[in-house]
Image (tube, rainbow over all chains, first blue to last red; front, side, top):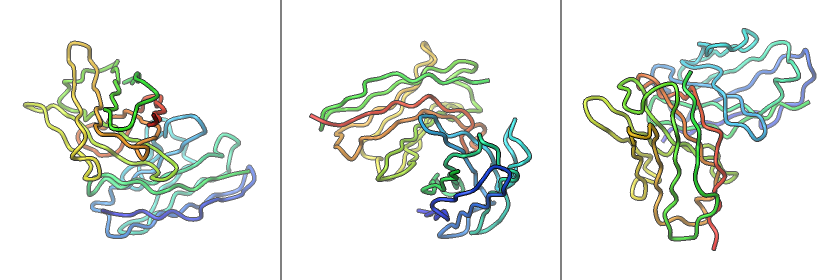
Length: 106
Length: 122
């Protein structure tokens, strides 16, 4: 099983700042099959990024995914109030596994 | 836009079978381009993919190793819904369960149900 380790666990930032979230895989993620999701309290996850860097339909260009192999990053530019949430990475190269999440808090 | 609406009990007794339904609108459960998945989330296990059913020339299933011996996922074309059945549950199966979907075997999840909080307790 591919284990995804997200860091930091919590990121404390202010609106307008940039958030940089890391997702490290225990082994190479085939074809960079890595996705990012945003989850707010009481809601289901929402797909932001797939294939490491492709934004899902309707996702703001303030969200940027990058990386390859075992190291991936989600960058959120100019944080807006609605961006404060928990973010998960998921690999789908071998079965499907998720990271434990990074909370972006005010 | 595909929409998923979940239903099912929020409380299940230990050793019994957990059953949840996911009604699909905006597409068909017999679509040959969509996989119908279940994912759960708990504080102890995080987000965990459980399995999927998908129809190509016939119906197929994939299941996570962690639940493979206890899980089934079925599709009901007459009701356009799919269902999760997890047998022999224990308190470790307490979680929020989500139905979700992926297109063309992509493996990432575009649309999600609202979630059902299931507690396993006597």
